[in-house]
Length: 138
Image (cartoon, rainbow, N blue to C red; front, side, top):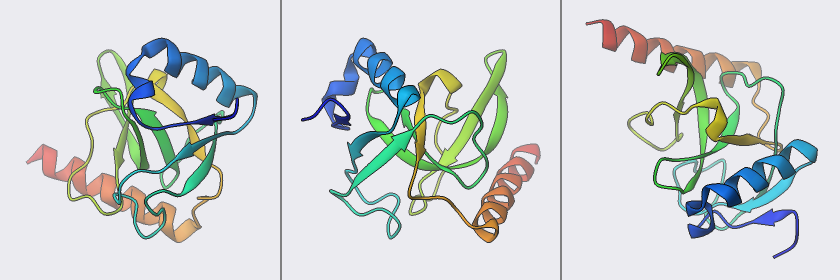
């Protein structure tokens, strides 16, 4: 594994490893391997993707973040919500039925470079987020 490449497996169980990887992503893209099919057909199992930190993340972006169990996940950003005294990302895999637990900004590694969504895809992400928000109000 090269300096700019990371596995999405158990190496992320260690918070210091993720912190170092996050610092590297701020300097330039890092490469991670996709495991699973939650972003199919956009991302295939075993595909390598380049991830870079961004100043801002927008609905529709595919972000890579550290889940509570230590795994790296690549899911689409739907929007933001208040959580634990700050704002958290609302994400969901394209092939998943439910959204993820709130993702704090400190858990975000970056955005997948090759997955820049078109305006229509960003709009669809916002509509999914609004659907979630409306269901919560009921």
